[in-house]
Image (tube, rainbow, N blue to C red):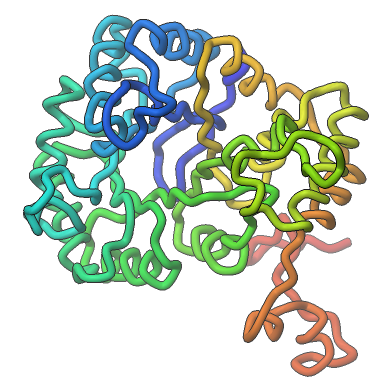
Length: 357
């Protein structure tokens, strides 16, 4: 099986696949209708994921106006795998235009959204329930107490956050810990070779506070597959080429080089790089066919050699800006600890154990 390795998600005992199945295209309605698929079209995708050992499924009430959850519920029931899969859904986006409490992160909508999701999914609980997007308004204390109430009621097993500022996630986790509430174990964020901003605060915050990061859009919306090229180079351009910078276009060259050296596709290298980065618990991959999904899952069948990873790291690096420059080793070796080698404890260190010769 391609997905026969499972890691704990954050500071929890929940075991999940290194690649999660994204189901944003399950269904043909709503916001995602342009690239949506029918139930019959996605059934082979879902079955292939299970056959390869995958157990981590991601959906949301907003995906295809609820059709994603409805279809997913049917497919799970057909396969008889409800207890096997780690079923994740999310809430925040509006489910009823004109109703101010039909969206956001408030308790009223949070409970209403979960109950509707459970009905569509045909189950009595979600394994992982995520706040989909920070609404800028709801007190974090209200969110965390509601997560705790839902967990105590047996309607969710674990809580998580998606697309929130790092300070918000930090406050949420600290509040939960200080008040013995259900903690957050997952943080879902965009992450790829062209979008590494979360490394500044989110990833180290997750590592410190026990939130496993799941990366969405590891292929940057298909940009890293190699199917698009800069029109200025005589190749065909991406439909939204104006949104990509020269730096990002240039990144395709080393990515293509690494893929050629390893005998794999550019997409596989990009997915592998994300899934094996520090602090990343799982990468979320979607697919338009079972064959495409199989190609993505094969991204874990090889290792990127250190020298090639360095090539990708350097080509995609984002220099720290503003105050973050002060937190770099170079700056601190210059002013904080000049002439000294000061750092964290070495790997393998444990208090009371001698780890030197």
